[in-house]
Image (cartoon, rainbow, N blue to C red; front, side, top):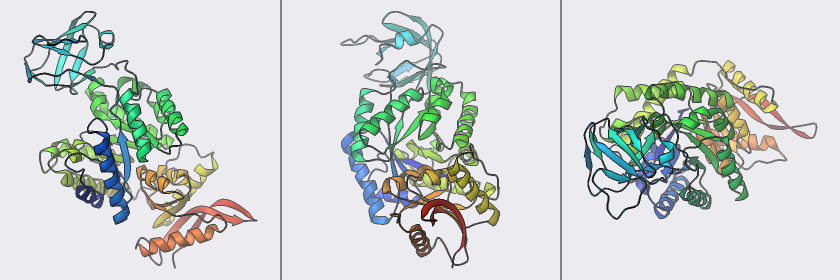
Length: 468
């Protein structure tokens, strides 16, 4: 059982039912749909395929919708515009019937106020760099720092700065309503700049009676500065290294990634490491050694999830890429699964004490598994935070919680209705189910975390059991 979860982005190369099934068989835990591309009709079809694959084949793939978020983009061009070092390019907020040569519109009027002379604008994360040399009330005049070709609707970042765009756009709100209607498991909030916007979205989801969990994407200068408040407000976070590396100095990205992962480990917030983990496999059938090392370090940091974007959405080798990620993750985990170190942030809370106790006992007796019974998923998530060596089998009280536990490190989840009057009956049903699946055998040592009846009351208890 691989402890680190894998997220695959579904796109033109993989959005038919047959290929979704292949990804599920290859180890995909969460399917990501990028709302920057495609329309609701296409995404609804993909979501229905994922649900059918789960139902027909016994898989438990969760679904994440990833918002487009606020973006600054250049305008349409009739043909690619060649740029040489020193060439002037005008970025204008004006709407014209036709634009002069070396002039392109930008989609954000406030851009004029966000940039200063001397700022560097990155096109598509740095494929071309432009220096601001002058600005007027309508135009930003830049000079090219690199040779390259500018094509239509390119993504623009201001190096070292965050643009003052609204954190949730009108399109995002429509996509949020779509996510609610489709009953997906996660919604990834792009360019979250602080805890307030996360709380605003949480309130909206609560008003709509939605159980969707929010994944905040840390991908801007503001987000890096406000990282702790974003993590504290979120159900999970994503280290979105593409835009993060465009706004921050590129040499700072590994340290920022480490800080985010470490803080998430301390708080028990699931964390996803994303972007360019296997970028070369969009074109080539084997990864670079640097990419393999990148996966190794993300897994060794005990990140909950690692994610592929274009590799599985539009790359030439989506299934080979998944195989590589799965193989490298498994091999890396072999290195540290004998380590008995336990981490839990706050053991003053009774449930945290229970999670810590179960993890310590399981490590010390080398238990085959910890079996957690969790109506909301909280108990299983707390055990996951400890990163025990034993497998964590979580039995959830609802199918929604079963899917959402897919984001937690080391947790394999199942749906099982709980018998409140006889908790032991629920435990025995779970054990028998695991034995039938070949996941437990006679003689295995396990640790259970569940309610038991004591003095006519239901109390949470840790028990050591021997399978017979």
